[in-house]
Amino acid sequence: MTFLVRLVVNGLAIWLTTFIIDGIDLPAASTTGEQVLTVAVVALVFTLVNMIVRPVVALLSLPFYILTLGLFFVVVNALMLMLTGWITGFTDFGLVVDGFVPALLGGVVIAVAAWILHALIPGDHR
Image (cartoon, rainbow, N blue to C red; front, top):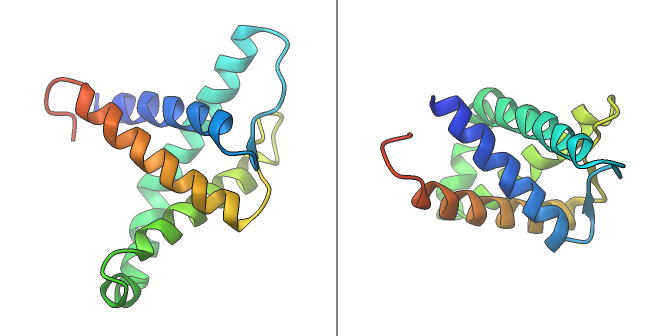
């Protein structure tokens, strides 16, 4: 159940980010179903990247977390978003990230949106 909650929250956060940040886009879809499928696939890849790759990167970059008092979290979010864009770029569901600055801003928006959505969902989902 936790995985599904993460998947839905990440999907909504990514979808919201594509409207707020100019350098982050999803491919154009002709129907609502195609758009939902695209967001679902990108959210699945993003969730898997955050569950598998992010802990390794966080462990390896622990000195930077300590040195920056946790602000390196934003850089790691941007890197995970860029990695998601790179992985999905090999499919028809490609998330387009135009560079590091849009990824950095998108990482902040996704983190804040996910935090708000997790706060709104009742129950223990962590």
